[in-house]
Image 1 (cartoon, rainbow, N blue to C red):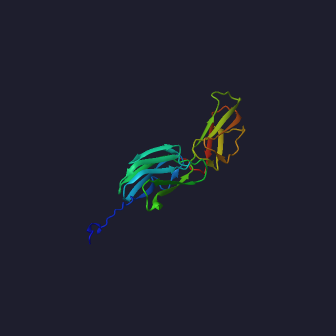
Image 2: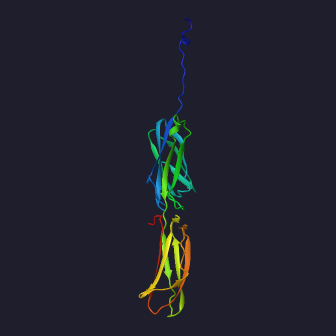
Length: 238
């Protein structure tokens, strides 16, 4: 071979970096709880490799049923605007994890149990050979909670034989509608009952922060008068 120098050929190829990212969503209260309570979602990002992942972004548009209170990150920088939550990191090494934690309150203004699903996803500029595990969901139920209160008030002073008016106020301080509401008022004396006018009718429901006011008139007897107002509902009242 007069030219042995060309008897050997070489070439190189650069392998492309890939990173198999995973995302898991862990609810602090998996089965939900009552309206007005708080809970958290932990979004855990993992990198199964084989390469480091660059420009990590975790996004979560949190449903309105879970008003966002705060966010924090471990290995991620966490921010939120309204219900839009984001966590970013410049890179995530193979075998490493990072966590985005979202603290929310539970909202349910109805008198029925609600169910809401929260979906999050993770992306990277590094190609992912198995993108099907880049999303995670959590479905939470929110039971209604009402906080019913009843107040009855008499005038500060009255004279025997005078017609006075008692004011009865019912209010729902809870975050949910109170369903199947029943109300009652008893006005009496140490010696018996009193004939009163303007006795209340029943209200079937009472919205959050809703108020119902009634007035009841009666003639003041010679004995001490007492009044009792009561309100109940089939909606749970903590």
